[in-house]
Amino acid sequence: TLIAASAPGYPAARMVIAIDGPAGAGKSTVARGVADALGFTYLDSGAMYRCVALAALRAGVDLADADTVGRIADRVEIELDGGTALLEGEDVSETIRAPEVDAAASRVSVHPAVREAMVARQRALIERDGYVAEGRDIGTVVSTDAPLKIFLTASPEERARRRAAQTGEPLADVT
Image 1 (cartoon, one colour):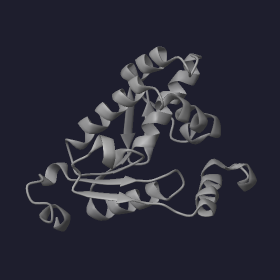
Image 2 (tube, one colour):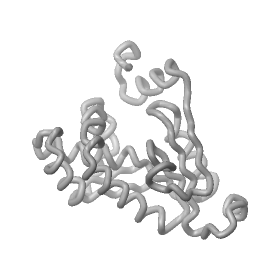
Image 3 (tube, helix red, strand yellow):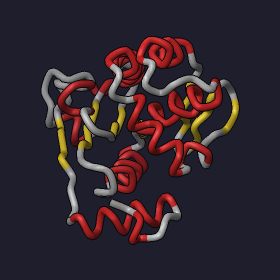
Image 4 (cartoon, rainbow, N blue to C red):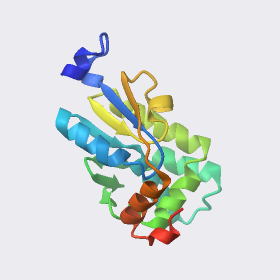
């Protein structure tokens, strides 16, 4: 591809375009569009953290318990296929977008063991194929050698509007 040709020495099979930025900036929309246009695989790293959060919520564990949540992150089966997220084989694509799971994902993602487990999985995925990977820390932690890194942002008002549309919460409740 043209992009692979512009990155000498970088194997086309593991070409990674990393899109970082804050919540609600439009990372997912842009990443899906770029992946579709290039025939690459789309990686939504946030969905992985949401799956860990959902698994922890379902297990009834204290989200502040770093050891237990870390063990869940190590063991839980997560599969991402385009816009579909599977947790232990169950399609949870809609469930992981609920406000309570989103809030729980923020709480579990601060644990080093959770981050280590998810970063390791993300790195293993992008080693296999051409990926457009989006999420916080994709270009700075997960794929530091990505030949193309994009930091996408939007105004606070636009980010709040996008988050409200995504979660179904009233705009006034989104901060």
